[in-house]
Length: 62
Image (tube, rainbow, N blue to C red; front, side):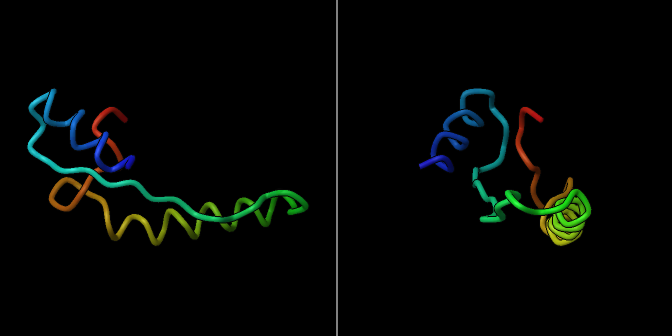
């Protein structure tokens, strides 16, 4: 349902793009700062292949 809200928000602001949402199921409880940092860096490294000016954006309001 979050993807629908993003589409609606983009339509209202006349942005020419659809919508989608994503995330991870990583639980930082009990993890060291280094483990959390490694996860975040790996997540963003993989995410960068799927976002960009000609591909997608993380959110129109970011």
